[in-house]
Each structure stands twice: as C-alpha cells, then as structure tokens.
Image 1 (cartoon, rainbow, N blue to C red):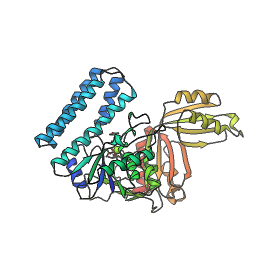
Image 2 (tube, rainbow, N blue to C red):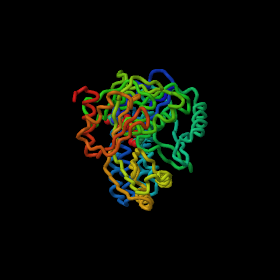
Image 3 (tube, rainbow, N blue to C red):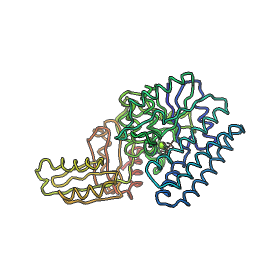
Image 4 (cartoon, protein in one colour):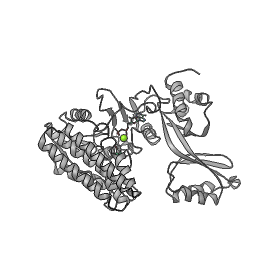
Length: 440
Ligand code: ADP
Ligand code: ASP
Ligand code: MG
C-alpha cells in the first residue's frame, strides 16, 4: 500500500481538490494524509496568539472571517445540498469551539487544540466531497493512532500497533483519509509535529505499515536545486539519496519537514515528491541510491545564532569542549555548525528559547560573542567534499563575508554561515556559477 500526502495548496482550492480526487482515484488501496487548507494554520496560530495576549476581540474577528471563508469553499465544493449542510454543521461546531476558546485562559494545550482544527476541517470536507463524487473513502482519525513520546519523537511501537489495528478493523476500505500534523502527546493531550509536520506524518505512517512508497504531493514539481522563493531558474532534481534529502530538509528546503526522511530511510521506503497541479512531471525520487557526484542542491536556513566562545585557557586544555557541550545539553539546545581554533570555538544554534541561560553558563568559563541574524547556506551532493567544483567555492564567494565554514563533517554537505542580509545574493551567485555554468 502507498501513502499519499497532499499539502495545504493541494487542498486549498476547488480546482486543486479535484486534482487530488483524480490522483487518488486510481483503484489502488492507499492512505491519504491531508494538511489544513493553505493559510489556515497561520490563522489559527494568530488566533492562539491573540488569546495568549488577551486580545479576545481580535481573535473573534479572525475566527468569524475564517468561518466565512470556509462556508464559501463549501458552497463551491459541495453542490449536493445534503452533504453541503452536513459539512457546514461540522464547520460551525469547529468555529463554536474556537469562539469558546477565546473565553478561556491561554495554555499550550489550548493552543494545540486550536491548531489541530485545520486538519480536522480539511479531512472532513474532502472526505464528503469524495462521497459526492462517488469515490468511496473512510476517515481514519489520526488521534486514534498518532502519538509522540516525552522526547517529542514518534512513539513508533504504539503507532504501529494502533494503526494496523484500525486498518484491520476497516479492511475492505480502498481510500483511507487521515489528518497530517496532529497527534497526541505522552499525556494523551492533543499536540502536533511542528509546522509543516504533515510530511512527517506521511513517513511515520509509511514506516508503520511498511508502505511500498510514500508520496508527498505539493505545489512544485519536486525538490529544486535551489530555493525557488529567492532564486530564479531553479530546476527539479530527479533523484536524491536519503542522506542528501535529509540534509536539504534539515537545512531549510521548505518542501520537506526537517524530519521527513528519518522514519523511512532505515527501512528503505522510497519517498516521491510530486506536483498536484502537474502530476505528469517526474518530480523527485528519494531512495537509498547515490547518483552522480558534485553539488546537487543548495538550501538556506535562517534565524541562526552564532556564538563565539573564547578562552585563553582553551589552549591545550582538554575537557573544555566537553564543558561547552554539557551546557547546551543541559538546556536541550542542539548545535548545527561548529568550528574551532586554538583559542576559540564558534558554533550555531537555531533555537533561542534558552539562549540567555546558556550565555550565563558560558560566561562563567569563557568570553562570549553573539551574532544574530545569521543564515546557514548548505550545499548538498554525493561526495562533494572531494569534487572539483568545490574548490571554486572561495572564488565564487570572494565578495561574500563568510562567518564560518563546515567542510568534511560528512561527504554530502558543505555549510557556510553568512549574514542573512547576504542570503539572496549568495544563493543567486552559487546558482549562476554552479548550475548555470556562468564562468568566473
Ligand atoms: P505544502 O503546503 O504542500 O506542504 P510547502 O509550502 O510546505 O507545501 O512546500 C512547498 C514549497 O517549498 C514550494 O512552493 C517552494 O516555494 C518551497 N521550497 C523551498 N525550497 C525548495 C526546494 N529546494 N525545492 C522545492 N521547493 C522548495
Ligand atoms: N498545517 C500544518 C502547517 O501549516 C502542517 C502542514 O501543512 O504540514 O504547518
Ligand atoms: Mg509543507
């Protein structure tokens, strides 16, 4: 069985929902994972923020506007009057719950309950639309099987047991529809897999049922060789290894949630990226094979903080780095890049939740400099550290101020840290000289 995930744009308009119907209605048994309609989760985040800041009038205004939008979509999507009324009744119950939330005081549980409504709405609507169109499908509530543990990692054993039991109980169904993104936490409260998490749901589900393939259907024809939001003339890459895709997803290629590849790489389930609007395009196949060497793609990750830790005592002092790492570990903050010299170590983090506390601890053992507004530019490809192109990098980037370089950590990745203001210039230059074969 295959798992097909459709993102926010794919379920965002009547035309695209029709495309989804045509893609999934091929007679094969499958699990379909849906995101919220595009824009909905952003709205819900903003409503939760208003509640947090006790701006309940603002929240109610946004809730009413979104309610109206959903009614318009339903009118365009569901011409069957019975199904139209049924879906509107469900939508109204969801928006009543949102209005009631504005009377409550903020908690993370309340925020997570609010955020979960987007996927609950889209799956309910699409399932009824399929019914109208004569396509038989069944809703599989994600909260019946998706769960994360205390570390916020998927509880694989629980998911596998629950999901397979639910599937067995509804054995004769051809198309199962479920919610991406949402899950229960270790205490059984509603939670989620972080923004963009529906991709992760798809591969978690794929791993739990040992799927033949996981497909991520979105608004672009595969993983491109550079970030299309900032660079013109980017091109789709037809094949990526799990390692390459994992690096690109982690270092900012928004098409994939950072953890997407994790559940499937060790059991070798291929992941295919496809465009809902252009289903005939090949897209990208991610699997265990490595193809040609050289730089295949570039991604950028923003909101990086660089910390320089300088200590005269670092000179020949074994155990210094251990002390540094222990501080980051104590505050559960992971380090992305690291470079060292005789007297200093520079490293980067992307999570500033505990930054102040970390700095207090670091200042006890060293002098600290902090640079915010940094971006990691990540070049990915098989065996790039040995590739002839790689040596041109310094020349290509001679007028970009590079703060840090990470080379040789793995054969697939070279990372550069630059000021975020230089991001677009750097991405474009690399594109021209590495992919468009502009000569220096
Ligand atoms: P969905 O809602 O379907 O999950 P996303 O917006 O999360 O879609 O991801 C698709 C978007 O990712 C594309 O529209 C594109 O702008 C962006 N993107 C960023 N980097 C890349 C890349 N390297 N290749 C393709 N798309 C990328
Ligand atoms: N709806 C969620 C988000 O916008 C999850 C997803 O789209 O993957 O982050
Ligand atoms: Mg996404």
